[in-house]
Each structure stands twice: as structure tokens, then as C-alpha cells.
Image (cartoon, rainbow, N blue to C red; front, side):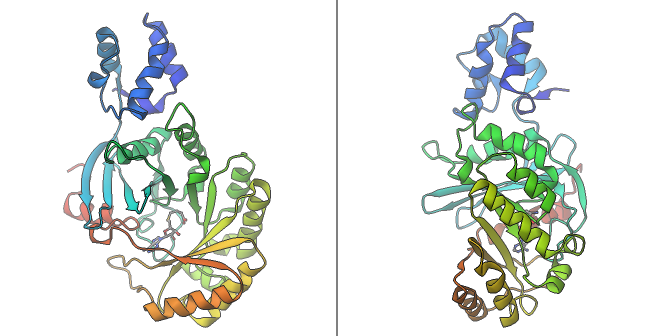
Length: 349
Ligand code: SAH
């Protein structure tokens, strides 16, 4: 079987070349073709010796995944469903808002956290994605952009619990953010987590500048236990302590995400609890009106209820934004496309 280029490193590829009598510097060239010039196979790498291109193609391929499905919403949002070598499918989304070009990537096949309103976790977690599988999503999505456009932001908010696959995720992000990759700014990357305190502390200790978003969804213990089952083991205060530690260590303000579910976490008691919890912190709240998932009973609150919620939280001096939904028409939200496509054409069929 061919190896995926992105599963190796420039140094290891240089070694591979040297062993076969090719100059090592060509390894860097190969990666420049992939990262800067959007090459998707070796045939396109026109300034490499022909013999080297042939040797590469015998043992390597640029991507390990293939595109199983590509859809474009009326608002321009692209959604890619990628099929990994083992037939597992993951999704990534490319969104354009004003000057921003944001890619949203997945870290696992499925998710083990079981948040009750989320499509990704309905069937549990199957496996972690490799460094290469994470990188490919970024590059595949970037390659959809017009040639004069660049990615400006990267959010790790697709399928999976990001910090449950911390090592592969960081390996992929560090490459993206290095000059050997896309030279992307670490501060333009947001890692979203359900809130795993130990992993949050580990990430804080890595001395990176990635922005952390914590999926809070409730500021009252009993409500969070219901929505985010893992909270029963973790507890709100441990999540908040780890978030505080992240801020102290990195100097980066933490964002708290809050999916708004009608009649469940959108009342005055909930907004007051959120205001109180965040008032004494330098933190930001990002409210996410629920994206309906087929088969789940939840609904998004009315615009008035969202407005009242925002006003209440703001009264505590907390900065709040409400996330705009992108790509709804193509199920770009939250693990939904994979389910729909699987219903139509199961993997491996
Ligand atoms: N596991 C990570 C990252 C993936 S989900 C985490 O929990 O943060 C990214 C965000 O989308 C999370 O805040 C998640 O709770 C939210 N989300 C999941 N399903 C959603 C839905 N149907 N509507 C709105 N937001 C949803």
C-alpha cells in the first residue's frame, strides 16, 4: 500500500530520497508543492526530476483520503466528506464570512463524549484521526479556495473530542503553523473541547498560542450533567479551574461555547448562572443557537429568547456573541452530512 506524504515529515522524506540516491533538498520542494502550489499528485511537480517523480509515485501518494462528497450551500459554504483509507468518513467545512476564510476540521471518527444534542456522538467514537488525516482536511479545504485567497482561520469544531486526540492534533497543527507548512498563525487556530481538565492543562503546558474554546452549554451543574454526560465525572468547577489555568499560562482568553436549546438551558436562571460564572473571569461567551439534528427532539430558542439571554449575560459585564449558522442547507452543521450520506450510501458500498 502507498504511504501518505502527510504522515511523514520533511526530514524523513529527505532521508528516503537520500537512500535512493536523490538529493535531499527535493523533499522540501515536494512539500512546497503541496502546501503552496496545491499539488495533489506528483505528476504536477514539474521541477522535480522525472525519475524522482516516478519513484515517489511508486511508494507515496499525496493524500490518503478521497473526497466522498462535496456540497456547496447557497451561502457559499463548502462541505467535504472525506473517506479515509479504511473507509471511515469524516467531514470538514470551509466557510467564507467577510474577509475570513475559515476551515472547520474533525479529530475523530465519531465522538465518545455523548453530548445529548450532538449528531457526532450518536454512535460513539470509532477511532482517532491520524496527523495526516487531520492535515488533509485543512489542505483539501484550502484547495477549494480561489487561487488568490488564503485560509485565515482554523477551528477544531468538527467531529470528535479534540483533546481526546491531543497528540495527533498538535502534530498536525504545529505543522500547519510552521514555515514548513502553511505558515499559519497559532493565534488564528481555535481548539474546541468538551472540557477535559487534564488535557486542557497539558495543552496549556505545551507553550503554544492556540485559542481554546470550552463547550460549557450550562452554568448549572445539574443542567450540564444532563446535556454533557461526561460532566458527571468531571464537574463544572474542575472545568473552570482548568480554563483559568489555561488563561494564566498562555495569556489567551478562553471562549465558552453555549449551545442554546429551547426550554432546556435558555431561561433566566440559566443566563444569570452563566453571567455569574463568567463575571469574575476574563472570558468570552459564544452562544450557538441549536442546529436541528434529524431524530433528536431539541429546538433552537426564539430570537426574542436569545436576545433576552444575551442581555442578561451582558448585564454581568461579560462579552457575548451569537454564532451565525452557516451551511445549514447542506447539513454543514455538526456531524449531520455524514449521517445523511451514510443513510443513502453506506461506507464501503
Ligand atoms: N468535542 C468538541 C468539539 C466538537 S463540537 C467540543 O465539544 O467542543 C463543536 C461545537 O459544536 C461544540 O460546542 C458542540 O457542543 C457544538 N454542537 C454540537 N452539535 C450541535 C448542534 N446540533 N447545534 C449547535 N451546536 C452543536
